[in-house]
Length: 144
Image (cartoon, rainbow, N blue to C red; front, side):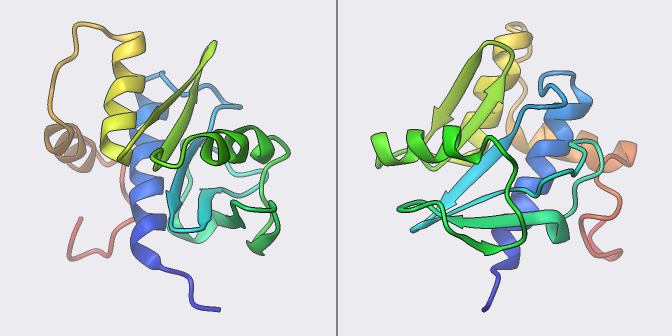
């Protein structure tokens, strides 16, 4: 099976940024739907250290794993994708699930649930994370 690298990289970046910001609890998840599959950090992986290689891929339709072992609460996110065909990202923050039509939009919405005054654009947040070393191990050395 061919695992698409780009969604796994995007997922790892968003997860680490939100974990570092204190928005994503240890049991919270960032998920990304691409077509008929959901990408999520695999079972037992820390939000602070997740890499693209730690990604589980699950079919949205029936929850069958296609790659790695999904976390125990994967069905919670899959149910949201089944209920809303437009959602491309669902993120668990304390007390809520945030969903949006893009991963960046969902991540910004999740960030703003905890820090209403933080209005920085997503590229700026990624640049800051890259500069501070939060993304080490996610991107090739030439991109870091």
